Amino acid sequence: MGLLSNKILRDELKAGDHIYSWRSYIYTHHGIYVGDGKVIHFTRGGGLEIGTGTILDKIIVSSVPNHGGDNPCPDCGDQTNLNGVISSCLDCFLSGGNLYLFQYNVSKAIFLAKQRGGTCTIAPSDPPGDVVARAKFLFSRNGFGEYHLLDNNCEDFAIYCKTGLLVLSVTKSGSSSQVNSVCAAGGVVSLTLRALGVGTSGGQAASLAATSSPALTVSASASALSTTIGAVATGVGAIALTGYGNYCISRLAYDVGVRKDVRKVPVDELVAVMAVIQGKSDDNNKECNKLS
View 1 (spheres, helix red, strand yellow):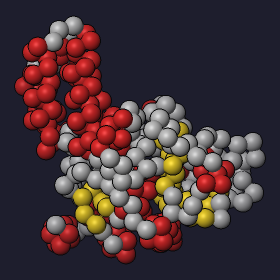
View 2 (tube, helix red, strand yellow; view 1 turned 90 degrees about the vertical axis):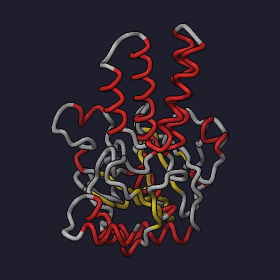
View 3 (cartoon, one colour; view 1 turned 30 degrees about the vertical axis):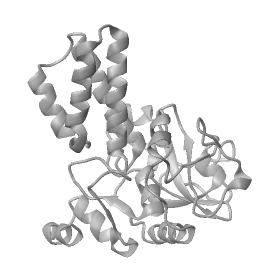
View 4 (cartoon, helix red, strand yellow; view 1 turned 60 degrees about the vertical axis):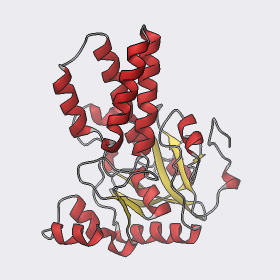
């Protein structure tokens, strides 16, 4: 494992590791290795990661466990329609993909050097025993709420197990760095289209960004960077440089180790907290006030 790749061998695995496997170029599936060849992870049955009921559900490759040619798995059985927190053997979890280790407590320089999200975080990990205990508790209760591609996915689950940190803002996407990288990249596309004279008016674009970006705390600095570089540089290359700087700032701001809207939530309180976040509690204000 090095700067350019987090790939590891199976015999390097330790209980409490946050592992992942690429399902496509843009999507990784995450879980917690708990020992004895088992992985606890969070999924949505039937491969409906997006849940639109359309062809879009199949664009992102499924997180449903698959044992390859020997399906259903003789150890795990048929898990294709299971929802929520489940336990699978390592082979089913990987579904034929390679094994990677998610990194914690990385420096800002290393974080920014990773061009794709879903591989590392600045946040430190808790001890392995705490990580495994959280994963097993949530598995026993199926207690991580409903799967949502943007706000509550497999990476959010694994990061919570590793850190105990939960994003509490209901207006912002979760701790998943691969989703947040897509959001950050959206700003790059928007910037390029505006520079080329394509898109909506500045006021409408600014309004949309203000309501959709989880990195509100640094949006001003990102805009300042774009404006400054754009004022002194010309050409498509300069546009790309400006956009990449914007992307880097936004990715860093989204990270769970930097965000200000995260709290340490004990695992035995998580079920109630998830109900509040997902709008299923009648006592939302009381719970949110207690956590803030």
